[in-house]
Image 1 (tube, helix red, strand yellow):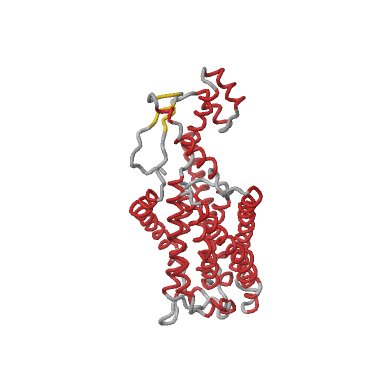
Image 2 (image 1 turned 90 degrees about the vertical axis):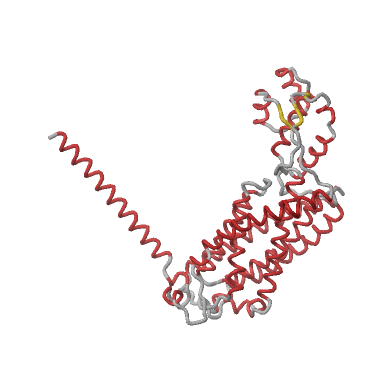
Length: 410
């Protein structure tokens, strides 16, 4: 009897779990049905009409961009690797850049513990550590400098990253300009909303959108491997917001306003890359020239055209052509994402302004305050290259020179 009672209890528990799972699935399906209700995303249109367009007409469906864009992200990664090693690295070597020297540091638990607390140390702190390790203050400072150097990307690595973004943004901007130039909505934003939800999407606009979305998938992935920056959280938010914006605008057939946002961003993103590349190659005058041009275009595009033309059109002009009671989720989600981008633009404008101020207030070279290791890594890389005493006897102060190879380090 006891055995049968226990068996019944187990059966009841399994049945309850099944009921809970069924109810949760039903709730999720109900929420999904409500979220993707046609009235929330389309204007005077049903999903059946989108699925079955007239002959010769294409209406976008979510499944037509999600997987293709992820596949394109993988393809772009392969193109980046080939482009990097065949063209960028030889060019970087020609302009005077070299692979970063690597040093093997002997393990020292005391210094490692101190480094975990503070990566930088002054003379007084170094002397205190010297009493615990039998090393001089100079030796400890050198150990810290080499320890930091192991974590910091060299100029070669950052030059290669910028070269890739320069290539993509340039091609993307020119392609977008070619694709959109003869489109009526490129010159008058009201055509983004007239006949909204039933705009035919030509092949060139579809691929422009899909490749751009693939690139931002690629950017999200490479954030884990590219040089870390102080604005890393902002970059994560920016890339996620952009992917969501592209997907939701595609699903709701608002590619017209979305493509205008894309080309506006590409119009100056490709100008920042050559400024950084020149800076890493120590061509300071050229770097500052590129940066000034970039900054002027940035101000015009991000603080004037974007908010007062595109965001205004999506927020206010659109209501003149669509029913206020339809497109509820599409309207509020897309406009919210557009405004998040504008907030990021303001944050980055402040950072860029600080770069300009650093030049004119101190009459020194412009410093990219958005990069986490921009100044310290470059200066320490120069200092380390001058420390010939480190390798005089093969090992000094707990540091040994690692043989340089043709590896992938930057």
